[in-house]
Image (tube, rainbow, N blue to C red):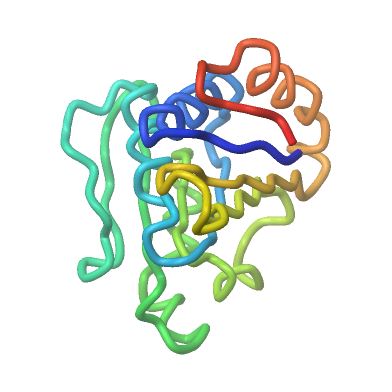
Length: 167
C-alpha cells in the first residue's frame, strides 16, 4: 500500500484508523528519516487506543509504555548500535506482553521480531511540495497481517480521513 498525507493531523488519523484492526501482540515497525512522522503516527495510534498521556519520542528513554484499551509499548531504537543492546531492552518480554508494540527505527530489531508485523515506511515528500506532505509505504509481513491487508486497505482508503491520498 502506498499513500500520502498532507498534514500532521491526517498522519494521526491514519494511525487511528489502524486501531480497530489491532490485536494484542501486534508489532508496528516504523521507519523513515528524522522528522518524517514516526512519533506523530504513534501519537494518533495511542489516542485511538484511549491513551490519555502525552506521547513523545522515546529517543533517550528508549521505551515508554502506556495504558489504554490495550497496552502500548513505544520504542525508539535509533541510538542502539547492535542487536545485543536490543536484547537489553527486554524486547522479547515486551513482545510477550499482549500489548501493541510500535518500534521507531526498527530495522535493527527485525531479527528479534515475531514473523508477523506491519512495516510502515514514512518519507518526506519532495522539497518542492508542501512541508507537511508525508509518503507512506506499508507492507504486511507474515500471515496474520497479510490476512488483514484488505481490511487495512479499506480502513485507509475508503474510510480514511481528509488529507489522505492514495498513490
